[in-house]
Image 1 (cartoon, chains in turn yellow, red):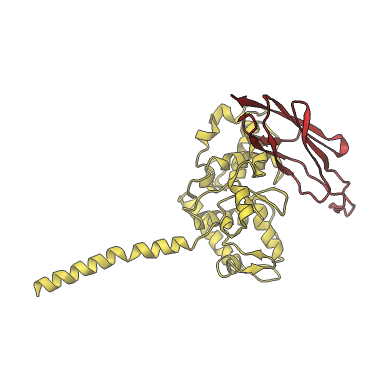
Image 2: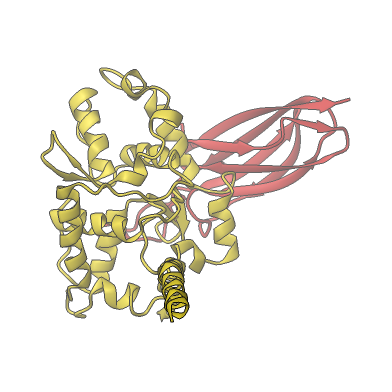
Length: 258
Length: 107
């Protein structure tokens, strides 16, 4: 009787130890990067730096890293390949001096305007995308690692609600396409899962570089919703949620998308 | 100056076929697209790309309005002698840009 009980306990322990692991890994396996939905030639374009058009922006960003009106990025941050490693994987994040959650683009602007004495950039300006691409490149291959502090988590939580909220004349939410119908077709294009692990991206449709916010605003236009202005709180909250949603996925920045 | 990136091996053996990849930042405005004001944006494209190897032209391409922005051109040539490869893009509005790359022949 005692032996049978002990056997049961052992079986129960073994079952409880094994059970969560496969469940977790299968949940992880369900997540696919947008590049998994692309054609082989587009994937090759992203994989191969000699073909990737985003490298034009990276080259400009690298040049900009060493210059500045008052002082260069190098003066404070040194070698970007070391100091900027993993930085892009941790944005959006709460910034003490701004007192709110900001994106990588806004963080670069803080430095450019505040420390370097440069005039503010227009949203989606090439010089900003160039620095963003160069900094994001340093995180390539690293896991997406959004910070877990209270303000960033709160922003992500608001973003989660926005992701599920129906908007626009078409009355669609992000989740309806990217959670419920990924892998299916929307017009001629395959709907990806909407993971933001390759931004900024060179989009072949744009024939240029663009930020995650440009992509978000694109979708909002697509469902005929009122589009928030660049760096609106809603967009930052959505970015924060997307970062959390893609946590642990490999950074591909700067990516290529069709 | 537009940003241009040329990728090719720095060294090769005599007679070896080498691949050259040239990418340049250019809007390649087709001349058929309406701008924000509804008026047609004037054409602004690269019309010709040439590659000369030690002064001798080894590759040339004509570009047309249907070609996308930031054109990427990949081609092959035979490495024959140590020298400079000169890449020239020329187009509308007096656009011209030249990049040079050195190629060394290994014994």
